[in-house]
Image (tube, rainbow, N blue to C red; front, side, top):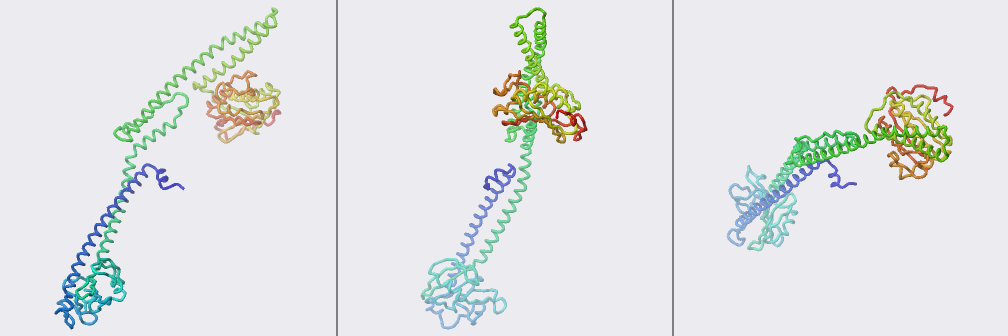
Length: 525
């Protein structure tokens, strides 16, 4: 399963920028929130400590010296504005002016809580009107306070009362006085601040993410335009012919002061370089093609003359020595072979130059029948079979060139397979496409030759020799003619089966096939 970092890298640049910025804002907000919370906590804790110290000192003044004059046997009279104890009508000695609501006082002697001298100041539970009173400590609360030592300040959670900051002081009579102030208000303040900070951080990050997404999308628009230009260039056919490489990144996106502008300038320079190279290549190809066409055209006349003179000499009534007759025969046969090579080169040059072919409906079924009939005469030592549909199949193209495609494929099968090989030619209508299959059960094409079998002058080993006068251009012509018809040609080969498939566009009125009796009644099937 991909890691989160890997998944992040797979996202778009816009998503990564927004997510990274949001994460940084969250991190900064957390740091600010933690620092602010800690500072506030320290401040509130410091205030509570100061309040606790003042409260403890005030309580000690009210208690006084237990052995002095203030330690009489009777109960203390409540100060003005302070009610008597809610329990026994007396007021504990720590009650006095300035005590806050919730202030806690506990006095222990020999580990025992002095109930008359302990309690929690409560200004919301007065006995008369708004006069405050004191609530006694429970046993559970007293147990939590009993472990406090002299001059110790700590935080404790008291059952029923909440959190308190307490300190212990040993009085002159040996008793332990524990004083505490509530921390509930400080805790509420701290929680309120934390909640406000969290809401502000989350809201700010969400707002920043929305605004950042819009801004990043706007700022990356030039990069998208640069990518669109590169995508349009990638769709151009640059492998052959004259290329019009006029696409460029707009000037508005080529400001070298920005990163995107630098990419746009670099892409334009690359396109300029590629365009110049393609123009130079096209000019060089045109010169070579023109040379081949001109040379082929010029060679046709002398080759025809050589053939004519050789044939004329052989037909002379004057006796000709056998060795001379043999030599003239060889001259004539080589002239014939060279004439075929020149014709093939001339045809390829014309196809490469983009010379348009004839475009008319072609009965491909009859073309296959004619080509196989010719192949049967030329290759009587092979077995020829047909696999045709019951209805005629039509395509649009040049009849003579399509006939040449089939002739070359059949000649290739006849030339490069041993006697007795079975060659099957089939037609497969497929909607808007029509497939022509030429399959033989010969030895197959060597594996190292298959990738370049359609190249010009490609030759195999001795099993695919030139013994029958092959020029090495037959399959190259097949590919050139089929490509000019907006089709494709492919080959699959293994020992015992070699299959060439030519795919051509069907005639426009096709999908339908006209009935014909030529294919169905042909005795050669």
